[in-house]
Length: 117
Length: 109
Image (cartoon, rainbow over all chains, first blue to last red):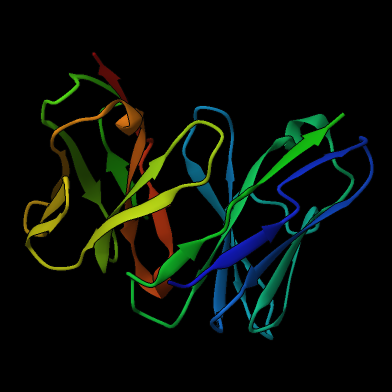
């Protein structure tokens, strides 16, 4: 089946620095990728929708200047957490879609654990 | 917007059957999915229902009633390894997936 790869799986960064998380679709082209955040023992919350070649669409309450999303190609989307703070420590996970309006072709990456110290 | 409701916790005995219900309110609906997530891991896809009825995949079955905005996940012959959190999720317009709060299933001997 389709594979979505995320890197790094775990990252620790110092407060105030920036960290980049990559999401790659390995064997299919993804016109749309999604970024979610999950705090411990909570649900996955959609942060933004990343569309190849255009600006990301952010959910209400998500700071677009803090969480920079770049979807430069059909197989790669990146999430950069800028000026990270300890409260940004969370599980970040991406998903990729193989096409529009086909709800059963969404694949999740393995997720990235971010710890800000 | 979308909102989903599912029980927060369920406990069941090994070998038994358990049903996890999910109701939703949505402004756009393409289908209902179920995901399993073990502690520390990523969600893994279990099933997807776009049409009314029951879908069976091995020990797991999923049901959808669009008229009732209701679905459930049925796990049969429970095993200890089934202890995990189970999320229902609605796929809406533009393939946005909205997750429920998750149901923590504990399988006991």
